[in-house]
Image (cartoon, rainbow, N blue to C red; front, side, top):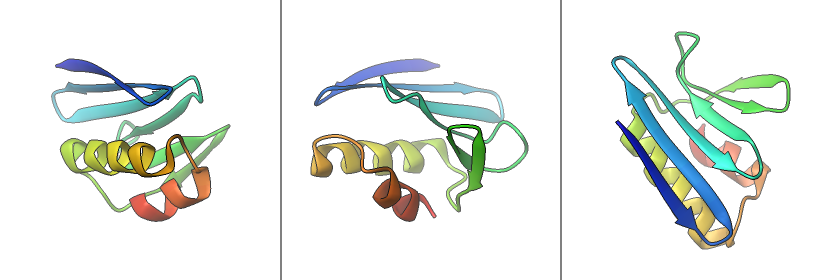
Length: 82
């Protein structure tokens, strides 16, 4: 499953493949996924753990954040996902 959304000035791609999922926010190149066996957010070259291991819940958090902030506030998004 892959779905694409336009939210304010961001493109959000939400994809699931079996046990793995990813949410990508463009053009910021922010990736939220569970690929390495645990849920995390990629910020540059770093991976920071998050508590949400459900793609739908993570997508809702990302979507609500972008709507509320009219974009991405990385520090707030990280707190909301933790």
